[in-house]
Image 1 (cartoon, one colour):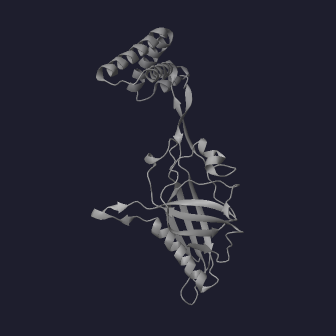
Image 2 (cartoon, helix red, strand yellow; image 1 turned 90 degrees about the vertical axis):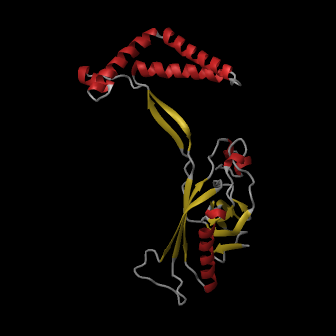
Image 3 (spheres, helix red, strand yellow; image 1 turned 180 degrees about the horizontal axis):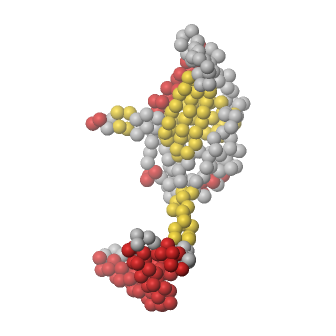
Length: 289
């Protein structure tokens, strides 16, 4: 069973957008990429809506941020931390308290050796530490104090660091203008479906059951459109309905149905996009996710 607008939409010939809801499943039961393949069967009614003139921009965001390792002190601490991390990663994970203690002692020893091998840098770091103490008395920073005293600042040693991927968000807006009483009822049913499955349900002991997530798919003819991006399962975070948007006055049909109904849907995908996801074998498209 499905609902579609407009009624004359030919699913075997026209491009359209398909929406189906599924019970939410957490990602910790998924494969090594974090993606939940398969999942529970769709619930509710499949919804088919006309292809918008302009589809939503879907950004693949990445969380990059600059971090300062100012002056010789920052450089020394950065390099020492990198060396210690390398030692930890190269050491077998401890299985007992004694092994853990030995790994800690080795890490401290490596850091100490690094400071000894970089005595020249350590000398500058000691001076910078002293300037920092003096700057704190003036409620300022070491570089600001140096700028005041001799017109120079410490090299910020800026590094652009990757923190991780971001979840993608996207939105659709559809405008419904019913041409018959039957189409008006379909429009109401479509709106009700989106509202119903994106809301929590009351479980036992006054707990709430998590709303369903949605599979959104661009369709062309009888199958997914391989030349448009795919979507991962997404939570419907906002459902907004507005009647007679842009009109100078309220207008409705004899039964009270508004002349124009605008439906806005905001989605956020429940999983991040990995490099492997963009392969055609996984995304099912020529352009990935």
